[in-house]
Image 1 (cartoon, rainbow, N blue to C red):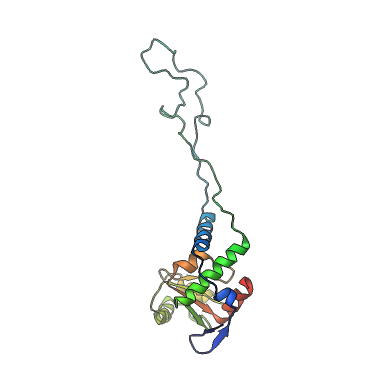
Image 2: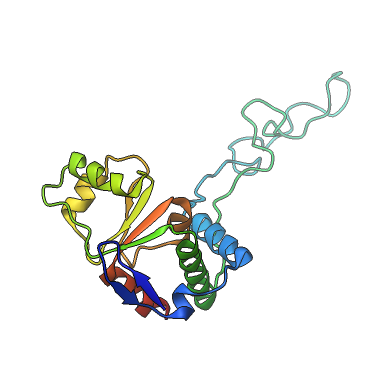
Length: 200
């Protein structure tokens, strides 16, 4: 199949990458797995076995009129341990490479069907100014745009970093969450060819 370039012309792409049926369950799994992998999971609290003290029974079992207690580090006591204390954990989910590539292809195919994927010859901003980039984004009708140039461009990064909802990603940095979360995805012709080589 062929995709039209915004400024004229077309680029030939594979149906296996840009013509795949939308698999909602697989895409959801890929997005959740990507976002879960970004979680640090480094929080930690002390349980009753981690706090210091509490080696002796605070008072005798009977005769005081108080509820029986075996340690001052009980979660019921001030300065005691935390009930069900948090522990460092890993939130990553296993997702096979074949499934991940299939999910990315499914997303790209759906973007084409919804006219949300725009292909251009180049994404550039010579002066690196936000005002210049904002004027260029008006052609797409929204600032909620994911820009995918063929090669990293410092001027494009500088011009877009202060625009809300505008993100710049390299081909190797593409992820399902960014593709799904933007109204428009603008890719250069060279980036499309690299994506096809990666997912094909």
